[in-house]
Image 1 (cartoon, rainbow, N blue to C red):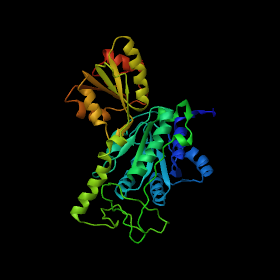
Image 2 (image 1 turned 90 degrees about the vertical axis):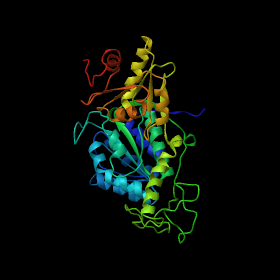
Image 3 (image 1 turned 120 degrees about the vertical axis):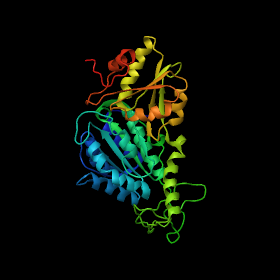
Image 4 (image 1 turned 60 degrees about the horizontal axis):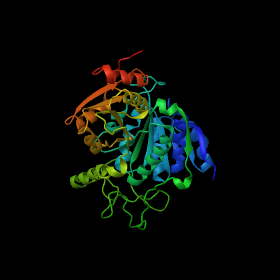
Length: 387
């Protein structure tokens, strides 16, 4: 039997290991707590696999650089936290409309502005969905364990390449900095997806032409003999700008539909102790870890309670949540904010059952004891400390 690759690994390190396993060959970034280790480890590890690391002068330059690198065919990533994520929004929109695959990691901290640099938060949930302007869809993933960070980083790259879109990987300070023992899978156990290359000659290539029955165009790399125009303006199949209303509508609809019409492929979630549950907690990231412990204890004292944990935060697992809502008396959304994902769950489930929220915004992790207290006695309260 071959020896297993078992390591004690930090969450941010697992992100880098997953990115390299997925084929990342370029990283551009700017150090910012609590994501800095991702940049540091990328700088150390990428040259070992023939990749390139560059520290840019700021966050806008960082995402601009990974868009450029992706256009040359390199799988590319950047990482940041809340303030930097805010700065990246215009270029996220650019990558969406120009259909350039890339991965943006946001290890969240307290905000707004520079906020609480070393404290956990989950305050960028709605920004991940609507941070850039205009009508668009987005894929945002949120792991909860160190091993899951490794796996989800790979999935982020695969989805980005498959749908030619930026993918956001959300984490929080807790899971970014925590360490767990994980087993790294062998290369032959990892599924890797790369963008579809053009089958036409350079002379006949249309960079935004979609083949019949498909929704994502093939993508040539700069430097391979294919010459094409890339713009943030609405464009036709050639890539050049147009003011044609019909073309505009078709383009924007396709950009949305290539994600929203493939939910079965994109959406991932965990159901924990839902069997026989009369009440459900929705939680994600580090908060879901506390919720799991709380549910174990609440079950022992007779509470019929379970958890639904979205791993794909956007698009929302609407079908699954609505199905659950029809079978339970109450859903409680617990998150380190004042109810950002609650609004989405209430929109979906509120017509079927009561939806509560519990949040904390002081830079402290929500503990299992706090959750137990809330479920048993603290209904309707927000961020009530039991210390």
